[in-house]
Image 1 (cartoon, rainbow, N blue to C red):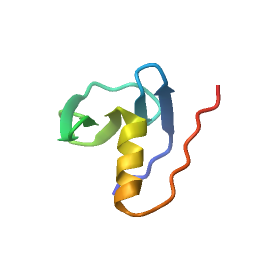
Image 2 (spheres, helix red, strand yellow):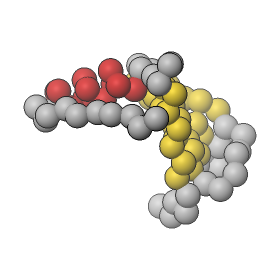
Image 3 (cartoon, rainbow, N blue to C red):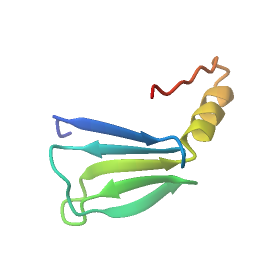
Length: 78
């Protein structure tokens, strides 16, 4: 498994979208829908994971935590 040297997160509250980028620079990638509204970005040559996008992030997060019976707290600093 490759070591992750840099992980960048970006959240857009208007669209409720979380963007995750792996690595120091942008790379060409194809998106693969892992589950509803969760997309993995994969380098088409190496097959390496280079990022991820979650649409409807708050809804996704609260659903996943609620399924596990965990308390839910969520805030986004502006």
